[in-house]
Length: 254
Image 1 (cartoon, one colour):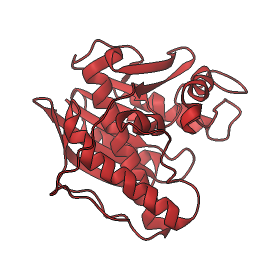
Image 2 (image 1 turned 30 degrees about the vertical axis):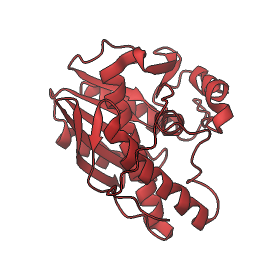
Image 3 (image 1 turned 45 degrees about the vertical axis):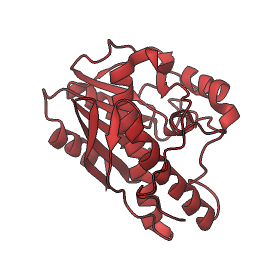
Image 4 (image 1 turned 120 degrees about the horizontal axis):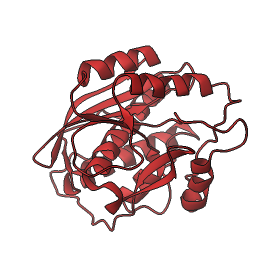
């Protein structure tokens, strides 16, 4: 089974992409990149998971937007459930300038055989897509009390938080189920466009892992905010994690 994560640029910005391959409950990293357009992302998906290959795509963007104005049901529920972590999501409606592109992206996935999966039977091969939100996933998978604020603020603070995210991925995901075995991840740049590029890639990696986690566990270890009619967001439930910090762990210092 192949798991794909997309940190989708909501308008014209680049998108982070990640591909993971599952074998014997262990995930391996196949591809981690950043692409310029939605067209490029769709071509990348078709290359890494050509139809009818069993695969799941987790996208950090709203693709079902039924409401003409205001907030979707899953957006309101995200603020209710995750606001205490500072993880409320950006609202989406049909009047938003980005809505047509995002809806079209979700439809393109459906045309390629990726059915929406706000409910599923765990560990059944197929072609699925879900909306995923990295911020609460990071909080829950890594036992944090708030989000890592690597998207806004001073460059030095963003870099420190992004380094923290990278280290948490390397420390904890090898010990979750399914496990993700990683020897290394991109070095965190000093700033500028390069820093944003790695941010998008790590978000995509979290999305790809989220896809695997949803497929493997279903609602046993995940929660779904909303449904197929209202739009929905999938997020892992909170984990009680230990401090996995072996002496030879590839930890990067900020």
